[in-house]
Image (tube, rainbow, N blue to C red):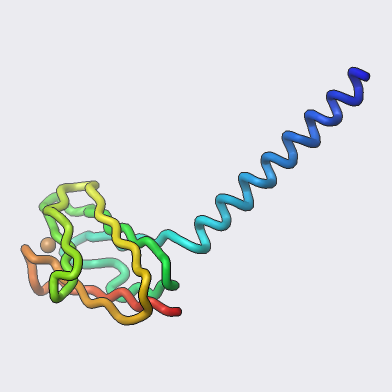
Length: 113
Ligand SMILES: [Cu+2]
């Protein structure tokens, strides 16, 4: 009886680990992408993602930057060093954005169906 319980517990632990793996993989595939802001540049300058992806910008510079869609459809607050801003893209298309404080800083998100 004790042996059986130990085997069951091991099987259960393996199943939980497997489910956790599936969940983590699912998130990585469906969801998250990152744009780094460093040296007054969005990196990568053009990022291609699938519909439904959440893009997170992170400021690696020592000075504040903003992330604003070119027509203001979304706009972050001023991001200090290591601060982030996220936007989820629900429609396919090309989104152009720039930094309000340094308008020469531009980037694009290409959202594919
Ligand atoms: Cu900037």
